[in-house]
Image 1 (cartoon, helix red, strand yellow):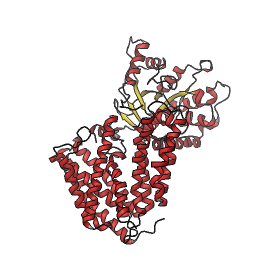
Image 2 (cartoon, chains in turn purple, green):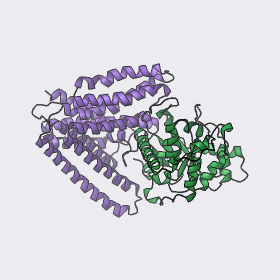
Image 3 (cartoon, rainbow over the protein chains, first blue to last red):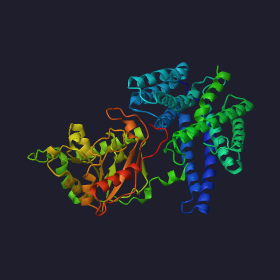
Image 4 (cartoon, rainbow over the protein chains, first blue to last red):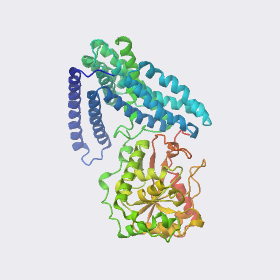
Length: 319
Length: 266
């Protein structure tokens, strides 16, 4: 188990929380102003979507801050819940037949809780191989014993993909607190704040600049993301990473470089998940986050960035 | 995020106050939902437990727990595509593939609508065990119909019409049983047509329950957490001179049309 959180870590969290609230207050005042001018009857779709999204952002900032303050138990629980919701959304859209029922039950009631238990115990060896090896081998066995059937390979692959994305990758976010980095004992929880802030703020910068100056689409058939928007997002991620270096064990230039890397992986992730949505003919993964869609929609970039960020931090900084 | 999705959120501000329960409801409940009456044992008087307020409270709490559990498993969502979730008398007719169908429709109804909506369910299923006899008649306040004609003591249509006359909306599964075939719907039984003829003014709302068969395929007992949507379509009415078959086909087509088309989904 983790040591108690040093008070400087909690004061860092409060500083980040204060900064996030300040940004949101400005955005909320701006939103209400826009609403009064453009959408006094509450019917202008862009303004209403923006206001709804802001409400979701408020909720996310509060939830994440509370989880970070609680420490390892808080973030593990928060991301376990997000992982469960994401897995439910993902497997709703995958191919399955009655033969997969036991495999799906095992995925939800055995694999998912065990993975987060391993993270909570800090057992790196187990949480690194449990899903890619053991779940990978055992779940198809359950499906074949229950009757195999048509599209067998597609079905078992899609279930495994759901587990990898929604459980394995998501669990690397709380796994960051298990890293033991010299000189910043008890501060690992802040790496989560770094990851989420850098990637999500980069996404927002890309979203708003891409709408205005974007020209060349990078994945025409699935996503409105443009090259210009992504360049702006990457620049903003680098800037944010540099500014936030003080919550990490990285030097400012290292923080900026890591920030760009995880942001770009995140962009790739959101394109991949958009391609899956396009293939299945849906617009959103779910409906639980007002204005954003589902948990997978909200976390797509963070999900892809998390394991990469975890490994960068582990290989280069952890003792 | 699509604007359509935003617009499809239930318009919470528009719910009228729930209609007060008609005086006849109590009387009706006491008599009709008594398992003794339904199993054909008329001589046994209505037992005391039916009036027990503690039992009613237990049923309400059990109902809330059931709705919470269903929400946890399925994140069930109502898509009010053809109607608004307002308090109007309706007959919701739905596809039936799983034992979880009834709890899901019941769960996605806003509480004010849920209070005045009673499902039509099979007595031979819901009176089999003590737990079911509590959940069916008391939690869902189901209008119990015996599917076995030789066991019927009352005309099932008359019973459903009586429930409508006391002000309730109803949920009905017009296929008459669970669909285990590969077709999206089995042919409808005549019941829906007969009810519609008796009370032609009541809205018949096609109600498509999506994905529940994957959550709990028939024969399985443990539900897999997967998203479910209940889609409410535009209401229809039986027209004069419309034949039984023509109406049932029209109703069935209206329900089938609500089915979401998913690429690649098995």
